[in-house]
Image 1 (cartoon, rainbow, N blue to C red):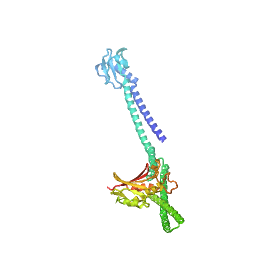
Image 2: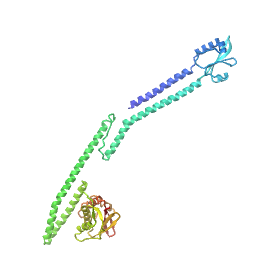
Image 3: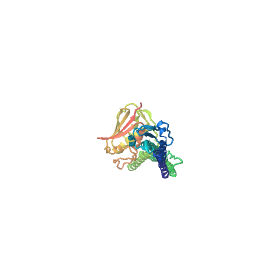
Image 4: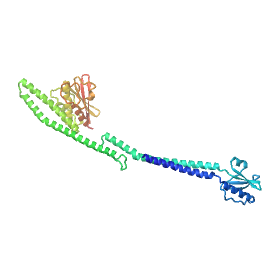
Length: 422
């Protein structure tokens, strides 16, 4: 590439030199005076002095403009384009003055016009034209060279930059297209191979993770069957056992089975959510259904609630039941107090304020409660996976609702905002 640039530069300089040389030779020819020809004209004029006075003299030898005057400075012959004024002006213009003699007596003068200024002006004009031509050629060659550099170097680099940005964003579907005359050759081809390998590796990773999640979901589902059997047997034993010591042990088994069932359920739901299989089917249902949902978790009559405003809401009854179960079970587990529920309509939502009367949460933990696997500092030795509120938020948002929480001076509140049917 450097050799090409050097060749182009040399061609431009050579062309400029040739043009200037031609100009110099041409102008030199214009400015030079042929002394031999002038001497012939002088001799001819002297021999034909009478013909000059009569106006019949013809010049076909000297190409430069000249004037012939007599002793009184009267013009008796003048070539076309020549304008004689006085001898003083001719001397001032540095014209060539030659005496014409007859019998050794001066009879007149021949004045050869000095066209130096005209030649100089012509040289200037030609120089300006030549410089303009050279500058134009240089600019044209420079533009062509810039286009050449852009197409062969800059454009491929811009393509590489866009390609790298796509790869960084994980967009492996856009190939790196390069022309056959690409200077980078195998270099760009290696980049495209890298893209293909990264895409294949990501696909393998995705399939591997999906297989693992499907395995966890399958195992979680399978574990729930024996757990349910153990729980049922425990309940039966609790009903039949009269001995307090044995009853206490069976009760321990029952509570631990209940914890295992909750953990497995959370794990199962989290896995399905990552597999995008936690389907939410939203329908229009009556708000009266909320009373039944609350009563389903009011086993020990620890829940009091205000009248639910009659209205139509958008919800998936099964998923909304899971949300209420999660929130109230958390209140039982961590606050260990009674629960009171307030209900009212606010703008386009039916709001349920589920309130316990425990110690609440620290303010810096409130924004983290709905994160996956987050458990607050008040959990102590209580069982849990940190998925209940995370899954509840997932369900509420997919039902076009919201879930939030805040501390009160006398406890902790979780707010469920359920979308009203339009």
